[in-house]
Image: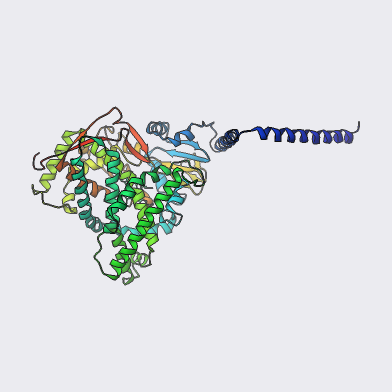
Length: 512
Ligand code: HEM
């Protein structure tokens, strides 16, 4: 038989085979259930991911990290940090490199040429693509400069009266509660109210604050590391986007009203939003050769202001609630610490309880402020922040992070470094009396570092020092401990796993 004949028979057989295969395949596929389709697709996708991961890292990964990312656990993060200076995981289509040392984390945070902050995929939909937080390079630097004025010492001073008013309102509510209750939700509401009153003043009402506080957790839960790329109605991401849109609409209306009051009615600014509008107004008639004045002298629309204010709420809400939970849990468990705070509070007020909070008074509260700092070190609300490699990034001389990877600097290990903070797992506020540069600068990654470092860091220290002093002066805190109180729950930031069960009792502030 000639070669050609063989190949003709072969061709015929191939056609028959193909027809047979096609018929069997169609018969087979007709019998396959939707569930089987989904499972098969998932297996194929995961296999693709594993191969992709292998090509980048050369070690066979496990599917575990994908599942872990759906329910992140502190111990698993800790195991990653302890496993080496650099470790990696594959989470679905993402190759993720985690840096655990201070030096590598600082290098990541100060390499804007190669890296930019990377929120989870769905964040861009929730926060809107036009939001300033997604700006990169010089555009980000310039926009941020126009916001700096909202967090100067003078601005922080102006926010204190409204914050004190709401601290007092919540304090009187807490001491009226019958018995103990979970304070995780209470503190989330408190912090939301304090932020919203600081940002929007009296343009926002109590009902709107309650609506935002009650629903805000839906935004946090929508921002899981792994999400479907599209927002499906009535899923977590859909609810998250809806609440974010509703909240931004409220802020936009507040900004419209504030513009009328500040620009047309010459009202004196007190809230953050009013300050921003006032600086815009001032800048227009100011010296245009001054860079900051020039940046401020354009018209920021109410929508733009609402988006920026939303980022402040977004950046502060979880982290500040986390700080509140650990701070009040710790002082309730440590009568020695509470006692020293109370002594200091009376001393700085000269026993005059009518003294109102201001920056000068808060500035004298050294011990109280050291307690806040120690809490931020001991239980840093933000464990790590994700960045994205815009280019191949040579993080060490031996390893280059591939472009497109997520790279995560970790803060917890630097803040628990025994060489910088001896007995790092002990809560020792007094260590801050003799703080070294390493403690306050190189290892102090609580608020990040570099061009994206937290814009609200002084705001946080001022607010919490004033609030801790005030609350302890007027209330005794009883912590109802459980075996989960010291366990760490990760919900964007970190919280006591039992959601902190506290009881508040009114006390005579003059008694030490
Ligand atoms: C305990 C409370 C807080 C903690 C622990 C915290 C921590 C952080 C951290 C770790 C970052 C990322 C830094 C980086 O990538 O280098 C950040 C960014 C940011 N934070 Fe905070 N934060 C807190 C409260 C606040 C508050 C109260 C505000 C505003 C009122 C705020 C506004 C921001 C903004 C706008 C950014 C993004 C800055 C940028 O990209 O330029 N944060 N914060």
